Amino acid sequence: MNNNLKKINIYAIYLGAFILILPLIAFFINAFSFRWFYPQVIPKELSLQAWVRLKLIPKPGQRTFEGFIELWASNPAVIKALLNSLSIGFLVTIVSIIIALPAARVLGLLNFRFKKLIIFIMVSPTILPPIAFVLGLNINFISWGFSGNYFGVCLVHLVPIMPYVVLTMTGIFANYNPDYEHQARTLGANKTKTFLLITLPAIAPGMVVAALFAFLVSWSQYLLTFLIGAGKVMTLPLLVFSTASSGNPALTAAISIIFIFPAILILFFTSKFVSGESGATSGFGKI
Amino acid sequence: MGGERLKIILSLTPPLLIIFTLFFGGIFYGFLQSLGYQPAIGKYEINFSAYYNVMFSERYAKLFWTGLGLNLWVSFASTFLAAVFALFGALAIRKTFFAKTICNFIYSLNLPMPHLVVAVGIIFVFSQSGLLARLASQIGLIGSPGDFPVLVKDKYGLGIILAYIWKEAAFFFIILMSVLQSLGENFEELAQSLGANRWQRFRYVILPLVMPNLFSASIIVFAFSFGAYEVPALLGVIYPQMLPVMAFEFFLNPDLNARSEGMALSIIIAIIVMILVVFYFWLTQAKIRKD
Image (cartoon, rainbow over all chains, first blue to last red; front, top):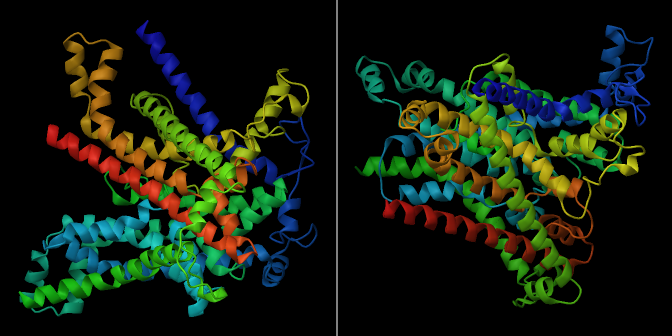
């Protein structure tokens, strides 16, 4: 009886895994098939047509190294959006880490008045929906000249990212012993050297997780980019959304695959660190 | 001592500056606009007519109240179901079995997946010519695509709920797995040796232990699904419409008067979320005091 129950249990897990992975299977079939008509489950013809139409893979006959370079150099929309998404993500991640580092150190190591209030203020953007602030901010950005440009989009991405980076790094500093720094200083190391040789190695693993996470939040931002970018800053989520609304499954699937690739990669590398206790995890619900 | 205080202030200023000017500044300016203060079109008087229009005017009242109903239904249903699925998944997957690591990875796979992609995936799988409909027709359950139930772009928000379950179950799953791991199996073994059956072990041992984490995760998920735009924009219908989509469409309306109404809606959404969060803190604080 108990053994039977165990078996049912395991089959239920396999079934659940299969159901969970169905969308991913559908993405790949849609992206690599041609005329995948109802009611076929397995497509009759495999094809790279969607990728050719997106100008990511050259037409048959031109698929040489030079052919790829030439095509990508012609700056197709997907490559442009991909570069925008990547560069905004990198920039915002680096800036947010630099800004959060001193704040997290203070919050993690020291006790002072209003500390709880400050933490509460810092995390408030994680609770309230982005639509609550971005509509008003949009008008402000127009008058400040930040609307419709790259800089404004980077700036607005800092709002959802900042709380998680500060929170995750505060957690790191709460378990960090600053005595080693004092020892290094007494032994004659200067401030820069102490930071590079003592502090940085100690906080690096946690910082990498915070950085990957910050990147992912920026990477999947749709509403903020759309409103502040005013259609002039094209990123991958915007491209996915517009292609999905125009209803071409093959193209949507192909762009989506590019879009989710870094996400899966990041999960693969951080699954060790991602646990319920980490501040970053709570943010995953919001991507 | 004075030096330390200066250090604290200097370190905290940059992130606080960002949060205050961009986040609270945005909310404040949105609130001003919702009161009708729009210098851009020469309106300076302050009143609550946008709120009144959105909630009670003949034109929008029906849209608003059905939208609010849909919002509550979608958020409650998806949060509850995602938590339930994740709980059973996490409890079942704890035991060792063949391909456990792979299953574990698949169960967490949706965690870093952007909501937008999950919504597209739901269209691919659950639409009337999607993967499930094709599978159903292969085994002879349905004939034409029209026989498959409308699960995407339906007026009950089923597609939206499915997308949120897909995405948030992974989030609950990770949190539950780490709680269950840190608890170990000692409590359960103890209960078993005292004669508790499967159901009793679940109801009186596991559930109370995971409840605090499950509950706080639920608040995050509920607040998010209540105010998010992408999923209902892709998977919803024009009527009834979820509030964030409605707010956004008001805002993009070329008629600048509709802008105040869009802002009013977004402030209403924020207030509802805030009330829920405060209620939650009050609930947990009251419980701590009681214990």
